[in-house]
Image (cartoon, rainbow, N blue to C red; front, side):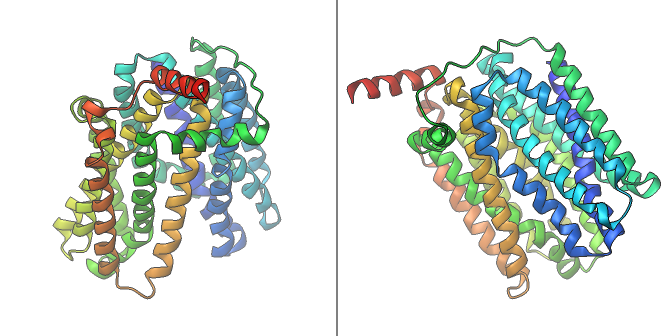
Length: 404
């Protein structure tokens, strides 16, 4: 497992550094803020191919897929060392798109392989540690990406990201995992690609979790825009003070990730996700208060809540889904929440110009609280009514098909 966490962590550090630097790099080359924004759009478009990525992850052995993804993406990222002027920015857009697709492939494949690396009772702790490491990376990657760009240029940032893919490749090369060849099916590619959505809709516990998460992450996406208004309008501080809130969220996120595995046992996966949404709801109310101490406390709640949401949802998905479907179900879930968060960011940008930020925060708190209450009150999300294991789910589906 050390190799798993080492490869995942270092690869993600390189990715985050490049993602943060790419927009600034394009701005420096072109002078256009709009063109700089296209970097994130290209990345999001790549991640929205997650249903296709999930199908690929389920149609071949996943370890070779991860090795190929790391090798090919690392080589393509090196192309950014040839960017020297405004006429070369298309290369940055292309690499960001490929990076988004690589993230989708990696996420689907690793989500499906992790249950083969650890025992079911250890999945929550493993997912929690992954989130703790992710939150820790977010504390260092802004300075790493932007600092290296300012000191040495974008080519160096790209080279470091390529090196991180090389580390990921080497780590996976030495990881031993049971990774059997998938059995062929009689479904066509369209049925195969949409099978993940079908499983999410047919499985009550996952349908409830996904619906609540989409709504919750829509609201969380709105705060990507609102955080600037909270800082400048509410607290009358410089825009750069947003960095303080991000740091606070990162620190509490590390703690939450480390505790998530322990919280999962008494609460269950669904109620752990509900707890995270509830903490975000209280935090949203705190963001509306024009007092520094209250806003910092709200940021602490945001940081603690996010790993709870993610760990609960991913662990439930891994425990409930048959392994041969896990890549596609993971891809379908990723598509839904990415789309929800992106729409939330767009909604926040549109609303902030016509609605006072506190009113948006109040509405966000209400929606998050409703999402949390919905999950808390579902029988399927209680530990006593926990979702069936993947094997039980597969047996139930086979019995249903036989009866039909």
